[in-house]
Length: 123
Image (cartoon, rainbow, N blue to C red):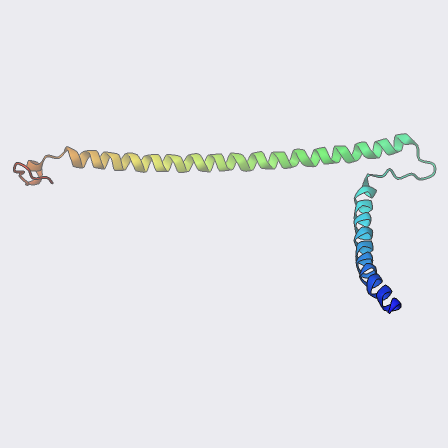
């Protein structure tokens, strides 16, 4: 009975411990993978100036890419503004036409349309 109890206790511990170990290994590996690009490549014969120049080049390249993206976004934004303004102008002209038609229809009197109103009637 003693061996069975020990086996019953350690079996879940071994299973969950193994799972925990696999999770811990994968998390540490992903953290290391994220940190490696930020490491400075130390090769024999390279000076600190060479490392800083490489870092500056990377930063400048990233800034250039960001500037290009900003220019694209501004262009797209301007295109949307122009199309939105055009849509508003079309909508305004449609509303104006409807208002003038409505004003012209209400300006006509019943005698002009050939209808006469008696007291208490409405059109």
